[in-house]
Length: 237
Length: 199
Image 1 (cartoon, each protein chain N blue to C red):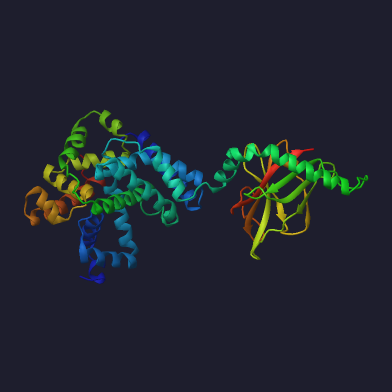
Image 2: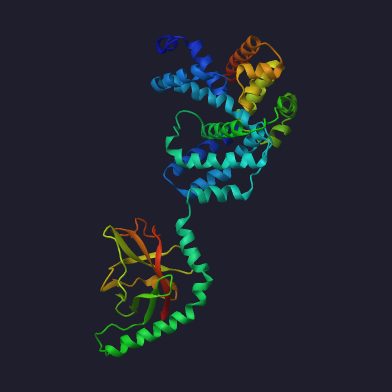
């Protein structure tokens, strides 16, 4: 039997397609049939028709519910909620919130230094908000100050982190609820000024975080794709 | 089958197609809705094949991982979305079945007892209890018009992944007889489902 022979034999095509779908077409005959399927769109349609005919036999069983663990396993295997686990995790990070008191003390100390070394003039930026971002060993890495009047953020790198040339650091405001918001890219060294968005003040976003992203930043404005490197409480002075 | 049931089936089909298309675009929320809409039926089917809950759950999990990965390969012009997903579950369940050391109990009788009794009964209630689609009800009616042994041979192959000779072994009949019955049974089903000889 070859493709030409089955092309002109409607009854044979139906028989083979039906047994292919039922599963009784086996071994070499099944493999040959699968070869023909690749070359014969009409035969693929005949198979699909048989699938539509026979597959409803699957419904001849009382409906049964799988346990909730099945969905959880699917979700974790396919990594369907990385962004959620990031900021949900951040919010639920009890150690982090316990350390918040200490962090704000450290931030206040840094702020005092900043203010003392630069006498405020009417044109100078005013630090209405401040955050000290630290790594997972609580080492301070960046100091961020916010000027409410000018709507500006200033990011000062205290300890330049190693960043590969094909990567960028991205700053995020993490709100109490909802998706994090990108505030822009941050240089690995020196000082960067970024616009301060309305919904990125400590009242609505109590945490700032830096993620490691592909060059140019996360393709999704509402979620980091890379790991969170630094984080800190965003406080009103 | 009432027109109302037809419309509902068609709506359900459209909804599943939309969800599958969104899943193909890696929309995780749509994928969750697809899971919610279909997992109970698909799980019931996996359980029917594998009998053990933990095996059926494994089959369901692996199937949905495949559905997520291959959703863009679904051709809406060919088979119905539920057919496509069920075929994935069936293949996965058979894979797991082949990996088992001990044979799963073969229960052609359950098929006849639980389902065929319901089909032959005039009351629509058992159908509703099984939450069958219109397609499944039509198939059930056509199956019930077959001779019992032909129906049983088809069910053994469909649910238990049996070859002609294995079906013959189960039914203690010559293979040639079983082959002929299955062929005739399928041919009758096709005619019946195309509306010619609806029971």
